[in-house]
Length: 88
View (cartoon, helix red, strand yellow):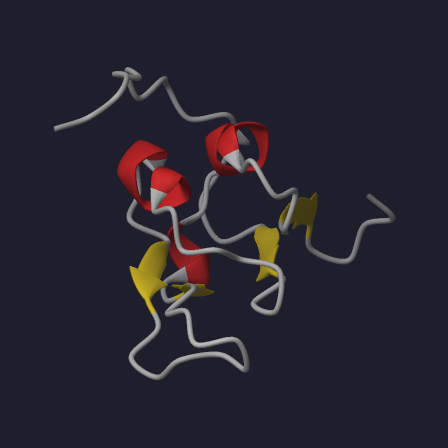
């Protein structure tokens, strides 16, 4: 049962122009990013990290449209989204 419901908003820009990074050592595998991503960028890691959790990984970075929903919802601040080649 979900504790809350978020509607997936319209994309921000063209797919394939964004760098997405998950700090796997900080990710607690809540899955919030997975549930809000409108383009299925994230997936569960199949092996545990050093503290035994199965954090999110960036599975389909080329699908990212830069909507920033994952960045905004991550309670551990372990997701970064920036324009490829940019200084963001």
